[in-house]
Length: 216
Image 1 (cartoon, rainbow, N blue to C red):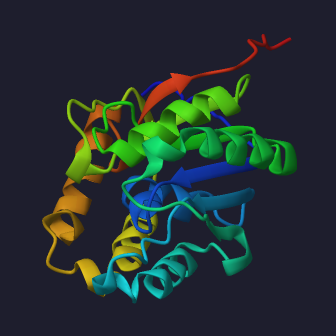
Image 2 (image 1 turned 180 degrees about the vertical axis):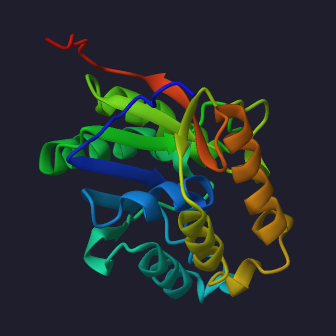
C-alpha cells in the first residue's frame, strides 16, 4: 500500500451556509482533527426565519460538541437563508474580515457541484476572499449534482461513529433521507473504497497551495 500524503494546518476553517451543512460534509474529518489543531466552524445563517426550525441552533451546538468542537469555536453569521446571492458583496466582506482575523491555512466550503443558491454563493466568495489559501469542497448530498471526491482523507471507525452521533442531534431533520445513518456510513465506506481504506471523507479540490520538499 502506498504511503499516505500527510497534510496539516495549524488553523482550519470550515464554512457552511446553514446549520447541519458542515457536519454532513465534514463531520468525520472534524472528529478526526478536533483537539489536534485549531479549528473554527462558521455557519452563515441560523435559519431562524422558518418557524419550524426553532430548535435548529441548539441542535447545531450539540452536534458540534459531539464532534469535539467547543461552543466558542462555533460561529453563526447574520445572513438570511436563500438570500445569499443578493448579499454576495456583504458575504465577501465578511469572509475578508474572517481571513484577516483568523488567518486559516486550509478552508473547507461547499463543493462547486452544489446547486443550492446559498451554497454556491459562499463557495464563489470564499475563493475570492481566501486567495493564496488551500480550499477544499465538501459534499452535502441533498443539493449536489455530479460531485466526485478527488481528495480523500482517511478517517477511523470512531470518527464515523461520532459523525453519526452528531447528526442524530438534529431531531428537526430526523425524517430527511440524508440524515439516515445507513447513508452516512455508506458514503464513508464508498469514499474509503476509492482510497483503498476502510473509511474516508471525500472532498473536491478547489485550490491547493503547497511547496514540494525533498528528503535529504
